[in-house]
Image 1 (tube, rainbow, N blue to C red):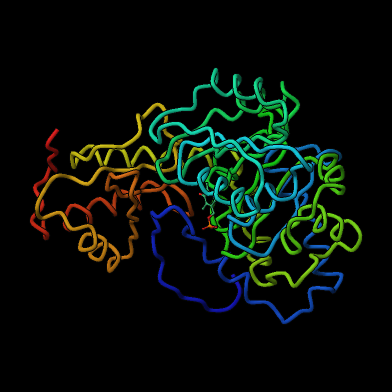
Image 2: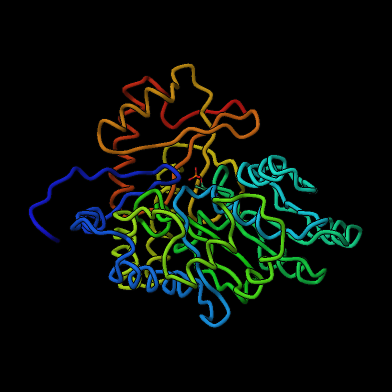
Length: 380
Ligand SMILES: *Cc1c(COP(=O)(O)O)cnc(C)c1O
């Protein structure tokens, strides 16, 4: 680590941004540099290749395209850029992030089918097959890998196989699994996946990327340009020709992501996933001891996000519990699922089992301090 650097460590249990290492934080402190310099261009080239390596993509076939923005930008980019004229998008929708994809289709006036399923259930693959068979104009199928609002994990390999059976391109929002749950882009039948630097990579906000099939990107050169700033082919083409982002990149954020990638490969895919799994299991153990209930069946959970029901206790006040934990360095996150009040505990970030044990000591104190009965109670 460069220089003397002391900064409070917070344990973020919210669904991103995640807790980062001090070395990643420090990596932002670099001499001022114009991003058109060769040094910066070379770093981005390496980064784009590393981002493909994380999902085991063959570099002849797959590429990564960087954007300056939060993760939603990737969904926007893929949907608006990869749909040929006169064709239709199919969104397999069982949660808030796929609903976001539907809203993007609406905003661009793209023809789409919103094939929705209950938020606490897996999509019915027979229905997906039937809709694809009956609607040959579907050219793009989109879904979310880990629906971060609930923590349900969707069967992307199976959905991808169906998309390909009917000749459609498959785009997957892997923002909350990429660089955590192992992904194999080709075997998982993914044409495009995506993420932002502040989740699985444990870097800073402001850098997002789409990893996908070069051939399909090149083909999309002739599709309607529905956005000037957020077009996949235009950004790809500029990268290919110059090695640069078309417009000003988030320079310091990219340096931090470079450091985070080094740390990713040093930790290793398997060891990192084992660590996230340890954290996830510690979250379940802590919740079980306090009597909390999950929203999603355990066998359907992504291993990264636990969505928890508010207990039926007049003294339960999420904000009060949150504030108590926050003052002690732990962040928990509220969220409504349909009409149900829930909060989330996530296994993202540079944290380990001991952080979760420490958190549950604080959570128990917070419940007692608020007068919430422990173990917590539910009416049914
Ligand atoms: C975090 C996240 C995003 C991006 O959300 P932003 O608010 O744009 O950062 C997109 N999809 C999923 C599944 C996510 O978890």
